[in-house]
Length: 459
Image (tube, rainbow, N blue to C red; front, side, top):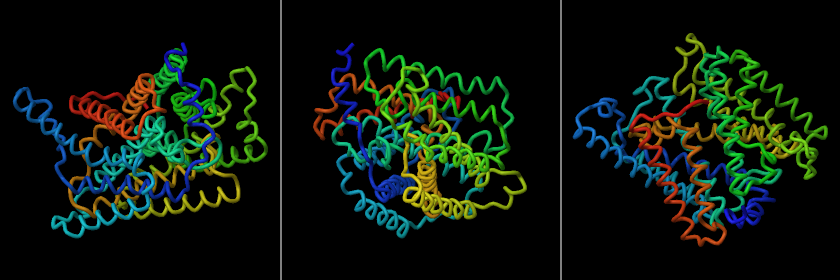
């Protein structure tokens, strides 16, 4: 068993006892990611998703469409994925300088571009949907790159997941996924009448994936950081638990914010009364509950976060028809920026005076930190109407169509790389090369799945 992964314990220690980065650096890094996508939109050469090309029986036409789509994917890979990878590795020490550089580059493109777009060019909902898609994809790309990069020494330890308290870039991963789905969920759109059959169809694949990950990691002796979720728990079980609780306690979107706030405040009160000490304690009794205490108790934090995301999504982007007619893109953008600044302020206050940010417990400060960071990315991407060019790209459309499936593929590829290569002894150049190859396979696999109409979505 040990031969599958001889450096298991070394790799586990490599991602343990970390304290994270500063919130300012996280803010700056997310700004870089977001502006980079805006610049990509300005460059042009974007694939126009045309169903007639995909459905045409003419082989020559289909071939031309595939060629154009491949070229668009290459452009997206070079303009988005490659810089993302460099920002997380060899350029990590220049984050603040890069923020200034990409901001000036965006101003240059905006100033000298004669074909400026207008806020009135697109319908409100069409424009908002594109912005939300770009936001979801940017967070997924950063997460997918980080889950492999963290196993190499070229990836800064301050960006990895923190042990107990602190703010690392990777701490945003699971929270961002929960929030990104809640903003556009059935509940947020007002379609909350889910049947038991639909609920089972939504959650059963997640439970199956959770057990599949548990069995596969155990069978090949893959490194697992127990302090993250517990001995047996994982990301997929958390998603399934949130989905089940949301189905059982189904409330109107207008009241999701109130319920979510009560859950989070109550959970935070329990943490301050001593529950936090129990969760972070290294002592584990042999029963299944104590073995997975981090994953089980953090469900309340993620569930509260999901409910807040439903309310925010309903308020900003959906709501009832009467409200929707009064909303404009500028109205939504102003409120996204206001909420972003509000949650950053609340995060700082909670971090200083209540309890520091803790992904491990998913406490109140972590929830507001995740909300602030995600709304920051969305707010910046909503500025796309002030720059010319296409509002989306081939890669963004592809990842948005198969968000969870792309993350699942990223996990499989990450596991294969870790079993095939001694990541701890890899040089910086070799590590970056491996990351480029990994990102290329991931991007083009997801891209071609989109081109040929393959869709896997159940949450």
